[in-house]
Image: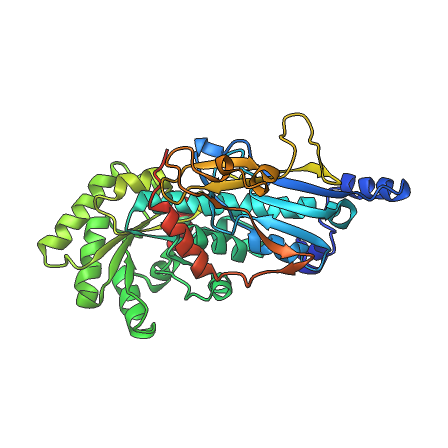
Length: 393
Ligand code: PCP
């Protein structure tokens, strides 16, 4: 029915570029079955981003689970920088070779989405950002997209199935179609208020037929103190100076005692618009910019064969660790052997001399996931904490 792969096909390594399958066939026929290490790393980020948020780790571990493979990785949600190895696979190359395509797909896309969501969250400051972009991507991956958006910093997600996956309530306001079918905005507001669970915040869409200012006043006069917010999803053809429109709506509501009514903005937003609209907006619905975020262009490269450092041109060979100074935030990539040798110059911060924390940790040991993986909420808090010290480029 749908042109998608199912979990079984992915888990069986069927989502693989054919040259991996041929490589395995050749190595098997030649009896070459080497113990290798390979690392996942990105040398540059899209849109000039200087930092990124690692996503897709839980799926990657589930992909490699039950294979005789070790995975040493940054935990999901870790902020990382170009050139830093974020995940290392260790084992017999033939054991995992055909999974490279699926592995990279999971990490590249989810990391791009989580990073864009994080950038929107940073731009919005203490205002909420909601993931409204599932409709721009294939429904088969909507739960993955919205989980990555939530982990990256979105306050909530719109799709029922995605919310179920992360153990959250789905977030939504009302669609233009409800107002058009009800025949008028006030009829739709009254019907929503009459029928929908009172626990659901009343957010009235105010741009269907009228100018947003008069639409907002109509919503306020219709629902009075039960109105939580007005949503402006003004079509681009009518946006003009949108900041002025937001200012007017705020002024007219406050003038009439509706200063408790919040302003929710959606439609064509990304971190730049969000930064511009923060003067008057209280929350945002972001769709395409997050769900269709550019991917993090990770590559997977062998760096060690049978314990000996080797890598292709352009890559640094040998096992590494990424260290972070919890005191001043300084980071460095060091050869693992040097670190294991306990050489202080490798484990201490060059800037403040403090002991540094290794970011790569063993999360899959001979195919067993260790320790229990964190919830989406835990990962999101971990991300939000790191974002406190970050700014947009
Ligand atoms: C869309 C929907 C999403 C918005 C736009 C995502 O509005 O409300 O929240 O926009 P983006 O992808 O540009 O960020 P409509 O298409 O007008 O749909 P509806 O009437 O269902 O709100």
